[in-house]
Each structure stands twice: as C-alpha cells, then as structure tokens.
Image 1 (cartoon, rainbow, N blue to C red):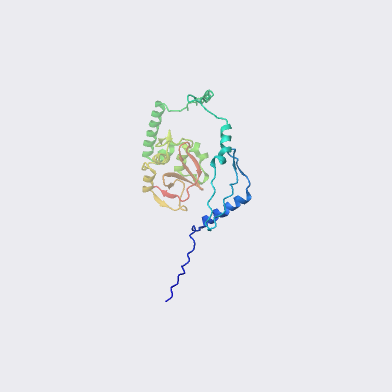
Image 2: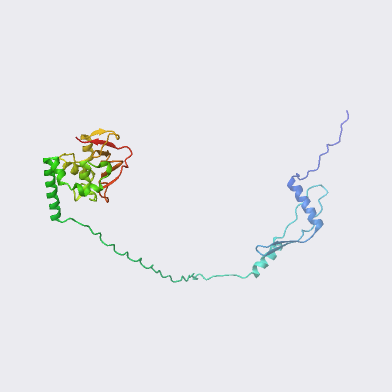
Amino acid sequence: MSVSTTRARHRAARRPSTPLSELATVATGQMSTVGKRTAVVAASSALVVSTLAAPAVAAAPASGDAPALGAVDTDVLTASARAVLAAAPVVTAPQEATWTFDAPALTAVAPPPPPEPEPEPEPVVERASSTSRSAARAAAAATESAAASTEAAAAEAAPVEAAAAAVPAAAAGSSVIEIAAQYVGVPYVYGGTTPAGFDCSGFIGYVYAQLGISLPRTSSGIRSVGTVVSAAEAQPGDLIWSPGHISIYAGGGQQIDAPRPGKTIQFRSIWQSSPVYLRIG
C-alpha cells in the first residue's frame, strides 16, 4: 500500500478587503503619484490652510496585503492658521465698561383749547297771563252755556259773517264749519281744549259743544259714538277719523283740523289714505 506524502496547499492569509479599504488604497496611490501642494482658503475667517502631499507610501508587501495609510502631521496643516490667528488684532473690553445713550429732551406742547361756543339766546316763551287765561275760561264757559240752551243762540253768538270768507264754497251753510272757521290760526297745544290752544279731539269737542252736542274727549271715543258713512255720503260738518287723529270734513276734498305741534288750525286737503267718515247725531 502506497502512502501519499503531498500536503494540502492553503491560501496565504491577507487582510479582508472592504470598500473603505479599497478607497483608501486608491487615494494613497494618487497622493504619492501627484505629489502636489494644495491650498484651501477659508474666505470668511481669512485662514489659509496648506496641505502638503503625503510622502509616498511604501510598496505593498509581496504577500498582497493592503498598504497602511500614511501618517498626517496636523501641526504642519494648522501652522498657517495659527500664524494668522497670532497676527490678528485682539479686541478687548474692560469689565467695568458701561453703555450710555443720550436721549434727546422732548417737550410736550398741548394744543390750544377750542374756542368756547357762543351762548345761544334763550327762547322766548310767550305765556298767557293768569288774567287772560281766566278770561278765556270764562268766555268759553259762557259760550258753552249759551250754546247748550239752543242752537240758534249759539249760531247768533258766533261771528259767522267775519269767518264766511275763510269757509270753502262747498261748506257754505254748514254751522259746524262756520263755527270751526272762527279758530283758524289757533296754535296746536297737546291736551288743549280752549281757544288758547287745541289738540285735534279738543278742537272737535269744543266746536260741537257750541252746537249743544257733547262728545267724548279722545278721538277713539268720538269714533265709538259716530255713525260711519261712505265718502260719497259724507257732508260738510261730518268727521274724518284715522288712527290717532280726527278732523272735520269741509267738502270738496278739504278738512279743518288741529294738525300737530308747531302748526295751527287750518283748512287743508285730505291727506289720509283710507279715512273713516263719521256722522254725529
């Protein structure tokens, strides 16, 4: 029996190859081949860093192992930067330094006050004297008492002829209109029931009282005692009622009433859109 004495061959041990080691090998070969000086300028800090080519690395051993990286002298690389820093001026400030700020002096000047408004003249209020008021009340009472006796006596006491020119032609012959026309120009007074001043219902009640007819004090009260007639049937002396107001129909599209504060008793056109016509008695 023959015995083989040939030993098995084994691959020589070598350093494991990785992408990083291969990149290092290529970079080292380029640095040893080129051998140029490189300068990197940092413009923002005015530092110049000079890099010298690394010395050639010894050839790789025959065994095929990857060559080791060459050593880098950091003192040489940073020498230029340290020189620039050493030559740069040094700015120092003492610890007791203080900051000051000179503020300009400001002076507030108030604007001149606005001129005072001129005083308005006090309104002149004409007041009827107690004597005239008493006389008016006495005259009204006398007139009412005389009218209550007979219609003829009331008609005789009223100055019909003086007011006849102010009565519209359509109302001629109406005793109500002839009496009402005597008070044209009397001012409107809220709550007034005398010739010193009338409101709308006070005027109607005063005129009809001279004919011996007593009416409620308010316009709604007068509305409740009147008989409603159509516009075609209405005659001068009838009443025209609308919510909150009452007047006397004067014929021909006219009425006489006490309109509102600031106005006086007057003949004027019928302005109500849909009034209610009333007949008293």
